[in-house]
Length: 317
Image (cartoon, rainbow, N blue to C red; front, top):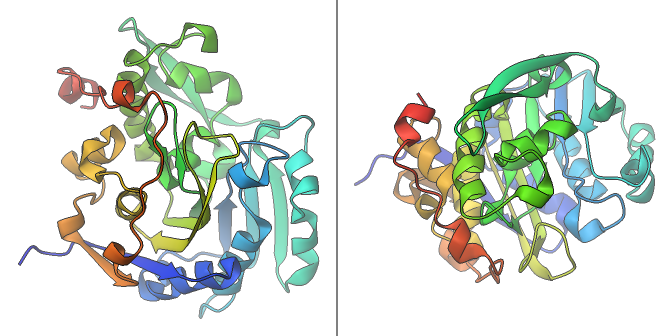
């Protein structure tokens, strides 16, 4: 029998808040081992007004309910994001996040990472073979416990976007995000080149920004030409793990994709950064086979799947 090297809690239900809590409960001991006095929740605000593409406040409630049930609950919870908004704080306003602080006996602070003033630089790769820098926020790097609260969505470069990509691309300095694709601006981006570069750069930054806990709220998923849009799919699942690669692998499979065929998960597993081989993951709770769906892939998925590069070993050394 293959040795199980990671655990993922997988829950299924109609109530988003309860489902998120249940996924965490299934891996309680693992999550409790990562707790600290300060915990940061990282939602996904792809949009300041499209709820389908952005984290629901009830997913935060489920996570906070669990945090406060631990033997040593945090004394401060940050909810930190640098989203795509029409005005600063739009997502907090539109999605009802301001109500959270009054609901709990703990400090809950909404942090707009666009306002970060202390950045740590790290080299990333450009498509022409040169390097530039990406800036990571000290607020995130210094937080003793980070939780990425993601949504299962298809993507226009990485096939899917889940907890690891949410943590990285939603926290780094916004002007550097397009450079993560290997190009100086969005107009010059081209597949499959950007798939090769983005997967490499995400792995590079995962060494600094991988969350302590991955939490994926799949009450609804987004399929087709994601990560935005309106092609929602009622899904009714949630996954949690202290191994972000394992959580992402389980959810990718639940969406109908083979984890080790995806660049980010392939590299992470190969390098020992996490476990993405389903045979090595102990799925607690709901059977994975019982929740597998067939998410409609992005129309450019065939090009996105050409992420492989002979230079990967050197570029990821």
